[in-house]
Each structure stands twice: as structure tokens, then as C-alpha cells.
Image (cartoon, rainbow, N blue to C red; front, side, top):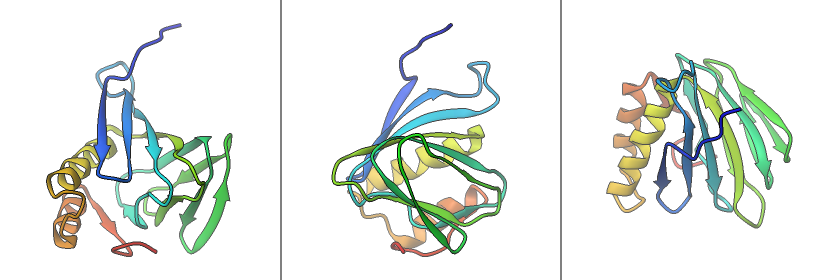
Length: 147
């Protein structure tokens, strides 16, 4: 068994933070990161045209959107957002909640680029800048500004 600390961390403005646990080059074909989301935080519905994402709820409670369906999930629940499927989530607990995310390394590159954009703009990036970033990563925001 190998146990290791996070490779690196990132902050997503005032919505939360993440810790990259494994990435390509660590002998993994996927990236794995742990996300801490503050109450009410989470990404607007979006779509990735080139990859799927898997989420495992560690603590708290989230409302996930897959397509047109919203579903509340609890610790131990697993959510798979297939490639090309609209998805997003919101922390609906009254305290910070945690998820484990597994996706290709290209997904992690998008997350880190978005964190850089959010943090460089004091948490308020221009919607056009977000749209351009997502487009560069073969993704798209479906409902800018939330649900």
C-alpha cells in the first residue's frame, strides 16, 4: 500500500478548495482530487464533450444535476456524469462538504485553469472569460450564473 499527501492544492475563490491526490505521471491513467465545497457552492451546470467525471460523496450533502434531473446525494453515494451529459452540483448542507472526483488529466487541467481565473478576478470572473476557458477545454457552461 502506498500512502501519500496531496500533490498540490488549489482554491476556487470563496466557493471552496481542492487537493490533487493523484495525476497522470503518478502511474495513474486518471486524475483524482478531493474537493471541499462551502455551503451553497458548486459549479453551474456544464458539459464536457471529451470526458466523463465520477464523483464520490465523502461528507455532507449535495444536489447533483444530471441532464434535467436533480438528485440529492449523501456520503457514500456515487455519481457518474457521462461524456456529453450536462451536470453540476451544489453543496446543500449547512457546513463544508467533500467530494472525491475522478476524471482524465485534461479535466484537472480545466479545474486548475478555472481556479486561476476565479482567483485572479477576486472571485468574479467575466462570464465571457469563463465561456472561453471552457471552450478551450472542449466544455461549455449550460446555465451561466447558476441554476
